[in-house]
Length: 143
Image (cartoon, rainbow, N blue to C red; front, side):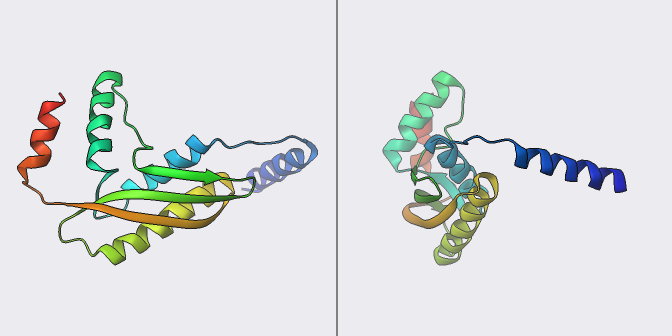
């Protein structure tokens, strides 16, 4: 264990000796916010219905998930502000889910980027009812 501590101490002192600038792109912060939001219980999807439909088409073509759907960010040198569009599951206590989203997103961004999150605005766009055919039909049209 002492060797591990010594190695990390040496690593830390080396990092202090090296100068440079780190720039974190807006898309990086948006991706972190999108993934962190989806990790919260009660979140069904991100974005409005048109955004989700376009995302489904894009996802089919590119075969990649769009983690930034429903996320807008403003990133400064030391701070970030986040706007989220969320669809929650029916039965979710929305105020509790919103508080959990704010906390989880802010923690994830601050931990991974070192940026101070000054606000997380949440717009609940819809409530998903499991077994509702309208979402399933929409997905079927874009496949």
